[in-house]
Length: 174
Image 1 (cartoon, rainbow, N blue to C red):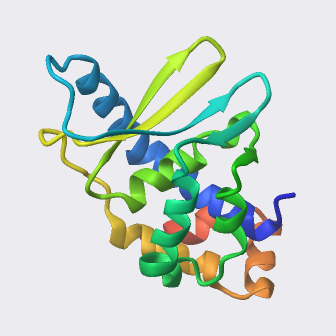
Image 2: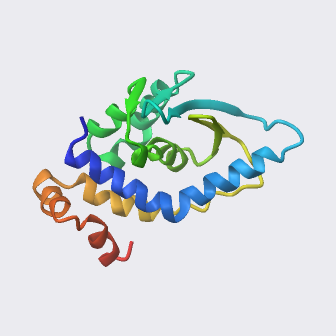
């Protein structure tokens, strides 16, 4: 189901996720768990079922994200082939790729923080307003890295076959 180009996006998201977004989600989740009063906005957008290896969208957030991406972030992706697959109501993702959608939600929704709630074999994700938790993510660096994703298939295959996507990004000092 996932093409080489999709996997390039996943690698870019993992690179930025492991260096910054994961820490942001953990901080937000911890802060959320300590709140005395509920935040102004809480919207559960989906969950990842560890046993079935599926991400399931909730509350029609996939349709809202589709409109949101089309209106403001389409140039970031260059094409709609990967993000449309990620916005299906049920998305099969390996355990190693389970954070792709939450990372993308954290990147594209600067006004809200993503939190993770863990229940048995399910990781639940929500968008919340947490005024005291500031976003530390550098969108400009991400946009520069996305250049590799937007490139034509020949360029992408040349680097992804050799496993050099991240090396290329590091050489560019992104």
